[in-house]
Amino acid sequence: MIGLVYMAIALPVLFISPFAGWLCDRSGPKVPAAGGLLFSVPFLILLRLPHASEYNQAGQVAILCVILACLGTTLTFVIPPSMSEVALVVREHGSGEYGQAYGLFNVAFSGGFIVGPLWGGYVTQDVGWNVMVGTLAGLAGFSVIPVAIWTGGGIKFRDLGTHFRDAFKRSRRSHPLIGL
Amino acid sequence: MSVGLILGPMLGGVIYQTHGYFAAFGLAFGFIGVDLALRIILVEKKIAIRYTVTPLPNAEESPSIKMHDLPPLNEPKVDESSTPPSTVAPAHNVWTSRIPTGIRILKYPRLLTALFLSFVQALILSAFDATLPLYLNRLFGYSSFQSGI
Image 1 (cartoon, chains in turn purple, blue):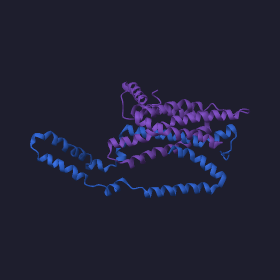
Image 2 (cartoon, rainbow over the protein chains, first blue to last red):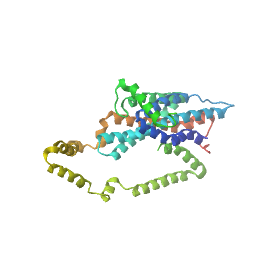
Image 3 (cartoon, one colour):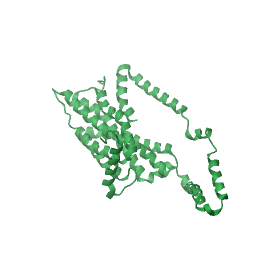
Image 4 (cartoon, each protein chain N blue to C red):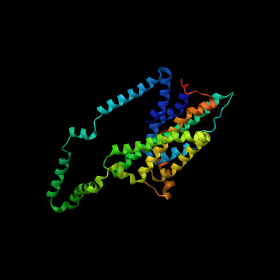
C-alpha cells in the first residue's frame, strides 16, 4: 500500500513531465517554476487533512493519494526549469562548460536530498506531521520570491504582471489544447 | 530523474519483500553496471570533433583574407567580419581562465536561484521519502513491508 501511495507522486511526474518541459521551452522557465511552487503550497497545507478513521480508512487513503498526486503535478513543473536554467546561464556567460554546470546542479540537488529527510524526520518527530508539511509549504512559498525575480533573467518589479500575462498569452496561443 | 528517485523506495520495498535483502542490493549494483557500460560507450563531444570535419577554421579564414584584399569600399564589412574573433579573445585572458567557469558563474543570482530551486524541490520530495511510511504507519497502521502492489 505504501508503494501505491508513492505511485501517487510518481505517476504525475511520469506523464506530465514532457508537457512541463515543453511549457518551459515555450514560455521561459519563470512561469512554470514560479507557478508550480505557488500551486504546491495549498496542497502541502492540505496534506494535514487525512486522519485516522475506524470505518472509512480507504476514503482517507484516497484523499491522501489525491493530494499527493496534485502535489506531484505541481512539483513536476519545477523540475525542467531548474535544470534548463543552469544550462542557459552557462550558455550565456560561459563557453560550453556544461559538465561543471551539471555538477553544480547535482550539488544543489543532493544537498536537498540530504537536508530533506533530516528536516522531515526531525520536525515530524518533534512537533508532528501537520507542522512539517506546513514548514514545507512555507519553504515553497518563500522560494517563489527569488524565482519570480531572477529565473529566466532578471526583470523589474514593474514589469512582473506584464511578463506573466504575455507569457501566458503566448503559451495559450501556441498550444492547440489550451488555446481552445 | 525524479521518477527514479520516487520509484526507488517502491521498487526496493517490493524486491526486499519478495527476494530478500541481498537482492535489493543486487539490483542497485546491476543498475550501476549498466550505467558504467553506457558511460564507456558514450563519446565525448570534444573527442568526436576530432573525427568529424576539421577545416572549419580554414574555411572561415579564407573569405576574410579575400575581404582584406578588396579595395577599401567594403571597409565596414571587413570590420564586422574581424570583430567576432577580437571579442572572443579577451574572454580567455589569463585572469578569468584561471578560475573554473563552474565557480565564476556562481556570482549570477540567476544561477543561484536555479540551484536553490533544485535544492527546494529535492528537499520537498525527499522529506516525504523519509516521513510518509511512518505517517502511514501511525495513521492507518501500514507496516513498512506492506508494500505489495
